[in-house]
Amino acid sequence: MKIVFRSCLLMWLALFTLNAGAQSICSVSSTGVNFGTYDPKSSANVDVTGTVTVTCQATVSLGILYTVKLSAGSSGAFSQRKMLNGAATLNYQVYTNSARTTVWGDGSSSTTYPTDGYLLQVLTPVTNTYTAYGRLTGSQNVIAGSYIDTLTVLVTY
Image 1: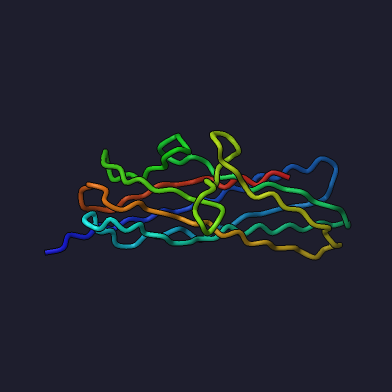
Image 2: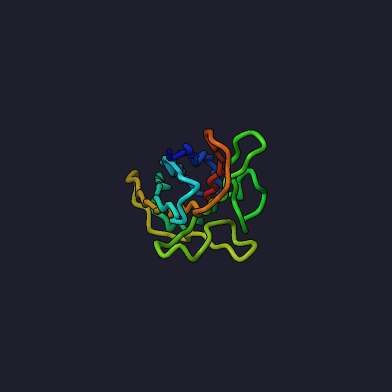
């Protein structure tokens, strides 16, 4: 008999705008990283993706540079993010690259984050999408249930 566990990571979005005299607005949205069913007897990692989308618009033509940072989540540490099911935890990580070697964070604790920029045109929104590469490590001894964590996306420009 195979026991399976449901796990889900939801990326929560937050909008932070800094308008220092410039008439521009950026917004962020995301699709959650859903790891689906997890088998704790399997040593295989579960690799999935989600997206973070940034859209900026200005009333005048100007250059915009921005960063897209992620919080550590409920674990409070980038070294090992954790989803929670009550007191039970399930380790996972979110990366900026498909090889899953660069942790997406806020620049602290050896993490990195996307930095981007472009020239905004008058009243024409510009949208960029960034892939979040999630990994749930195999062979974790956890109880059955739904596990969840919430990450905050911070766009600074």
